[in-house]
Amino acid sequence: MPSVGASLFWIVACAVIAPLLAGLFPRKLVPEVVLLLVAGIVIGPHVFDIAVEGSEIELLRDLGLGLLFLLAGYEIDTAEITGRGGRRALLTWLVSLALAFAVVSLLSLVHVVDAGTAVAIAMTSTALGTLLPILRDAGALDTRLGRTILNHGAFGELGPVVAMAVLLGSRGSVASIVVLGLFTAAAVLVAFIPARVRREGSRITAIIRSGSETTSQTTVRLTMLLLVALTVLAASFGLDTILGAFAVASEPGVLIAFVLLILLVRAGPVYFAGRFDRGADGTDPPFTARERTQLALYAGTGLPLIVAVTGVAVDSGDMTSANASVLVAAGAITVLLFPLAASLLASSPEPAADSAGPRGDQNPGSRQ
Image (cartoon, rainbow, N blue to C red; front, side, top):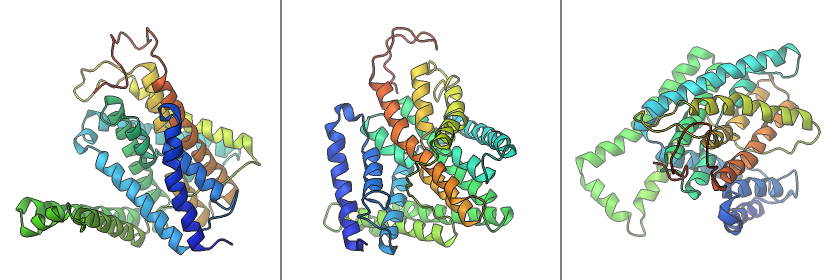
């Protein structure tokens, strides 16, 4: 069995090699995060088995996943989330959840799926943390399309977390809501203290700012302290999530069915909602069919929360490990294929006419 040191070496090696390989593809059509996921599967126990899990690797994984979510949070504009686009994204996620429950209820009647609640929640998730580096590399974060993706992604992560805590929590719905409230209050407090210190213009603020330009790197240290504090707090409240990958080949039909269900339940409502999106002030032209397809593919990309939801369901005995593996594999396929397909759509020539209406000479990748 590989040692922790050897496992750490291969993990770091993958982190270095992935961006180098991504740069070799024309227009970065294969995102770096996709190569990282593939590399993780290759060095893992299902392929070469040269990297194993342990307490040290689990800590590194949780910190890395937390940092990914932290960076995603920095990109979210609170004004955008609470505005017209955010409200539409929230409504779209609620529609996705209702549609998911309807679909799994029908499938449960014919005994196709078990743990219907967990499956429904899992299919409505969006891996915003995974999409963030893809969107940044494509230069799409500051475009109208990119901001819309961030809106749907924000609720595609927050919504399943709340639903999972309330509907799948071992404490019961009321107790889970109380715990979520306490965690939210603690997170707000952690964010409020630095903001208060910054506004007061104290000597501590001056020290922090001066240290950010020296070897002390005080801002980096404070960021890591914030990350570790929230990670420990989440673990204490039982809200921590895990990230993993499984190789599934024995049930390809079920695997394909789950991928199609994710397209139907999560990507479908987002595509439909894109027809009514007129921007933050309601005056922008509607998205083209191609842009709506990109939105749908990005929104349907999910893996981390799928792993978390299925893990909770397996631990509680509501879902078999076999079904959990198939659902997680379906999530992995969405991460591997959906962003790639969206990138190919963005890089291909725009047709002269679009069914969504006149667009003039606008370029979907450059709209603000």
